[in-house]
Amino acid sequence: MPEAGARFGPVAWCLLSAALFGATTPAAKPFVDEAGPVLLSGLLYWGAALGVGPWALRDWRARRAVRRVDVRARMYLLGAAFFGGVVGPVLLLWGLSLAPAGSVSLWLVLETVATAVLARLFFREHLGSHGWFATALVVIASALLAEPGAAGIQAITLVALACIAWGLDNNFTALIDGYTTNEVTGFKGVTAGMVNVPIGLWLGGEVGVVSTSAGLAIGALGYGASLVLYTAGAQQLGATRSQLAFSTSPLFGLATAALWLGEVLTPTHALSIALMAFALWLLERESHDHAHHHEAIEHTHWHRHDDGHHDHEHEEGVVVARWHQHRHRHEAQTHEHPHRPDLHHRHPHD
Image (cartoon, rainbow, N blue to C red):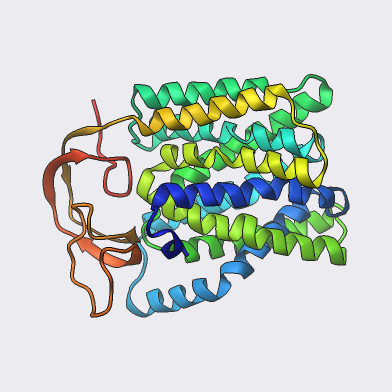
């Protein structure tokens, strides 16, 4: 799927992912009461699995025929599936049942903050002064959106916990290099659905024809296609930078809520959006350049051959100047160039 964005690259993938996911929150709002947050989250992820199913199955068969994935990649995938597919969506939809969809969409920028802090503390991802200032702006923008009242406080707490769960998911996802993006999305969708749908039914969620069909359809685009695009972008940009691009999702969620649900936009919403946009621009101005060493590694991810790291051979017919995905090997090397914390640059810093 990222082949469609070959001219624009990882930032465009994350922006398109943000557009699809941002529209999901207000689109799912009318079905929360009938299905319940747990059942609906399961249906959304089953929709994601169905959406990428044919491609995920193709990649799984091809991989099983030639190799096994190492234990570390499996643990990253399990962690991403649990926190991102099971815990996060339930907390989000629970909060969505207590607050307007537009506000919930904007609170989701807290995911960017959680991702950045977790990436720095536990996942060896470097973030400079521009990055931390951009993150601070997102915190301020999020604080402006916290509406008063018991329901607002409870709702934003649930959404904040969902963002922490997704922050862990984002960091795990950025490190997965043993599976294709279709496999990652398919596994997360199947796992989350298998856990949340039975629990949602046990908790009293109702399986209606309209809500079930809508959940699967919304999930195929808002979770399925969005996850494939985000995973590809996160592998190239790192967890924090991909999240700062993805933090534009509230813009799309807010627009959808206004157009479809008739929710009103306020000056506070506009100020928060401006702060988020400035934060993203500021992060893009950050430069990071120093000598670093690469150990030999063999992995799978989207790449092309104009970045100084990919010079392996291909079968005839593969256009190496375009984005493509397959298993490949890197030899050890030491060099210096501007870089981001992608799959090749997780070295320690002073």
